[in-house]
Length: 156
Image 1: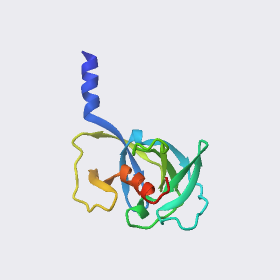
Image 2: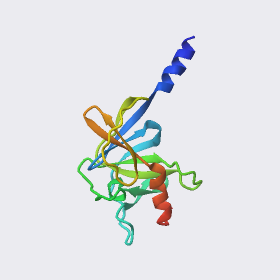
Image 3: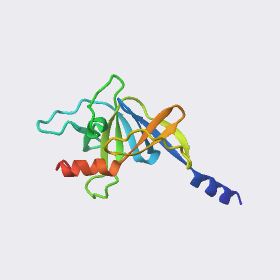
Image 4: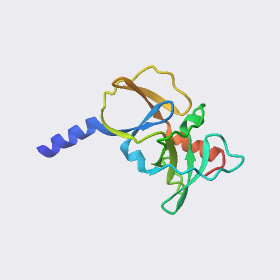
């Protein structure tokens, strides 16, 4: 009987992560984050789109480091609390397992209920939805489209 109760309650909530960016917060499921690593300035490469900041080393891999803000039509910014989120790739490409995303702080974990209140905040490119989290608005990123952006630019 307790097993049925546990199963039912686990389907009604999800653990999410708030990823702090320079101009917005993103909300992703906690399983999207593989690891959080310190920011290290990537080696600049001429001719890259503004949203592609370069490559970062992680666990014997070279990962593309992206600025979500720049990819969504804004400007890339590296603040004093910058970190790098290594995200699990979702696009189904066998040779692309991870992407790196520039953050402006440490992600926060929170429990989310299935009835998360939506808000009518304007959405930028690469944003699927916006939700109200207390006094804050968080955007739901389209991580598959972000990966597709890399593919379309010939970077993966």
